[in-house]
Length: 214
Image (cartoon, rainbow, N blue to C red; front, side, top):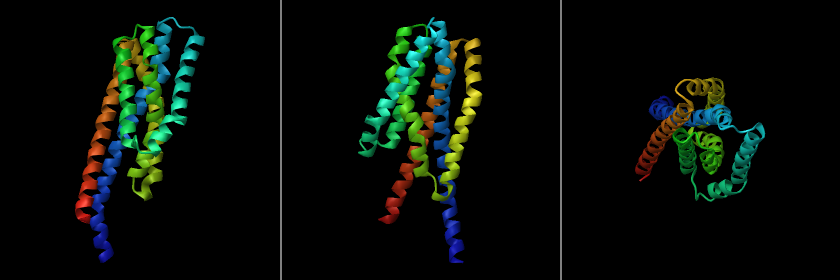
């Protein structure tokens, strides 16, 4: 009877935790979707319209990868391990940089200089949007559900890679390439809203636990 009562008491808390984790998962998925659209379709299309050669596009992608790799091997591990940049702030920073990159290219997509100017923002976004979600979801999910939650994150990323490149191409062929970049910025804003809701719910839960402990 005592075990049943404890399970009943824990059930609402578990349901709340699942809803909160679902919000975080949705936010991370929206950000990943924006990154997929940018890297797979929008940037290559923009480079073609700017008259770039294949080698120039390869150089640009290489610079993006080098910048992201250097940050991931040097700066991010130090800041995250020292807690100078908490995981939550890191995710906000990554999604915010991706939103700024997409919005800038939506407004000034006819300029090659803007494409190079947003490169630092893009390198920050790639490293954080791709690495932080798994860490946050692992910490947020109940221990028994962590494997399933990470599986959902991987499945959501795969779904983004299937659905969103054609969507970006359709927007570019329809309203224009600016619309594809604008859609990416909108996805980022949605991701920020979902993750911010999760952050606030997590903070409220921690405050309640401290009150109970006191």
